[in-house]
Length: 511
Image 1 (spheres, rainbow, N blue to C red):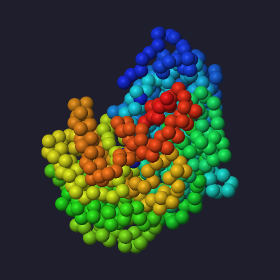
Image 2: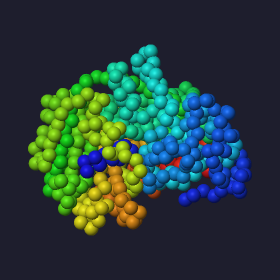
Image 3: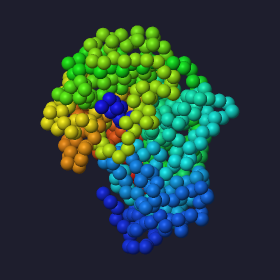
Image 4: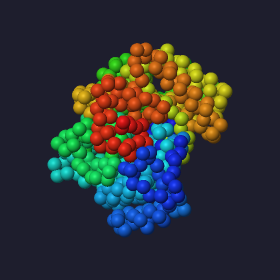
């Protein structure tokens, strides 16, 4: 069950149809719809000659269709009728224009880890970005161009083999842009900021199919929005990011398992360790879960914590002394190169947490500090489920994610659409429902834990990381509670996507 430790890291009601065979251009419709009985054969006939030869088109009868439409979370699985896999960036513009002209909704997909319930509302054509995965390091050695379909694991390995790193998500199977357009937390954020903080420019296909370059000097208003709310505005076909020398080759890891009786001591040590956003920068990432491990006990969850330090063991263990002093069921450690740290922390490409096809019911809250009393209440609620609903408890985890945030904190909060730089702990409730019979119970539990976290930080509004959000929150919960942020995003939505073509990922809706 330890594979559930950071399952979230690895991490659009059907639409009405037009009359059969009708083809009405999108911009003449009063309500968005996808035309009835869309088939891959039809799309091949109508679109095949307009795209590059390597572009692939799949329907449900094709063997690869199931693989391309597989997702991490089946609770919010969209209704995909046809999949197109563009072979060139220019194909994306052609595909979007075709969809607009033929009343077809489209959804671009990278790693397939979006978990929000709003995805379930989608019905139409999926644009799989899988073939757009090139990486080109620039001559300066300070940046690289990445294809819009690049995924975290291959990016880490490609750069590491050539002496570089960049900011990525924590789980190797997540798409770089799926994470980055919403911010993108990861092990290097304490040094260099979020993924979005390191994007220099993007090639974007807009809702009308036009292709533009977005940067500080080109469509700078959209550049602000793409970095934190980017899922709402376009399809990124490629992007340039900062890269950095690899630095220390050794990363130290230390994994602990504690019993519930140690909870207050553990969270007290965590609060002192992080000191409300003052985490030592080299202690890049720690994350812990309440989860079931029946090899230890079936009566209650255990506390599983993993720490990753950029540097040697002696430096790391001095910082970890307070945790080493807590009586643990298990304590294991070691040293690995950065390219292997995801494996030892359970977030690698082939780890069970990257498994697709499960039903995840989630809720999320950002915190500044841990309320120890609240954490005890949440633990006891998990313990009750272990007794009353062991099948649901078996697949559940309650995650507490922490990073060194020094570089994130130094960036002006107004410089991008990412809104929550003052938050230090990213928490996620994640229940895997073993059958539909458990979904209502899982939803109730998810709401209970969210409400407990919020009650434990009185006076604060709900800050929900958009990439972890379930879709049941509000627009300000995702994109910031300052009125100017929401007004600016809505204005940009009306400018760049007035007909709400991009409305399936925790959407901002143009008036």
